[in-house]
Length: 111
Length: 112
Image (tube, rainbow over all chains, first blue to last red; front, side, top):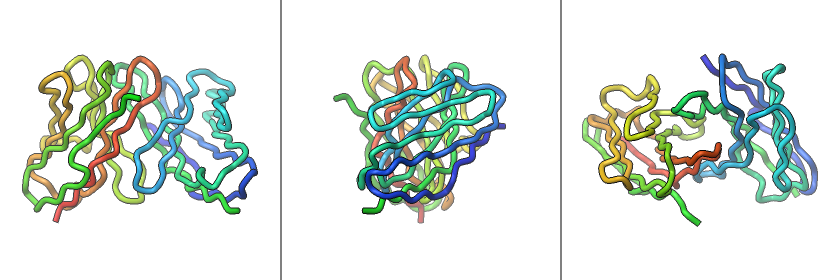
């Protein structure tokens, strides 16, 4: 089967940089996605790595290493509004493209 | 900006009743999904729909569940006989050719 592990909670201060790690087990996948979810809200897409390496989108970057079964999300210049849950998710290979989700990391950004 | 919409936002039903959750995906998208999230837990895949048919379903998606895309715009999830453990937030999502899945705001289903 497929499984993902990520830390349950991370705390940081405004303006800082935080890295959320994700390790996974899978027999095959297209890529690794990252989603943000505020309390009571819908997941919103942040980043996707189809290939190894770093993808940068504004303050957010994501990294994938298939040989290490590892990825991370890097959040820079943290703002209070970044307090949310962050999920890594494997995009399945094939026509279904389903997402298999990790348990999520709750990020608290303090002043 | 196009968005996925879902109705109702909250549905309360009694155990054993049928519910239909409705979604309008983004119009030119190709892939459609239902996920659910029990309060405080991770998002779980239920079913994916592509080319007018189910492309994959999870072990959660048993005979009590069905999906339809009746008119080319709506995408519905039906639960025939609800159980207490079906209480969750149900998210519809759609995607085009890219990796990003666009999620609707969700329907909170409460089974009493």
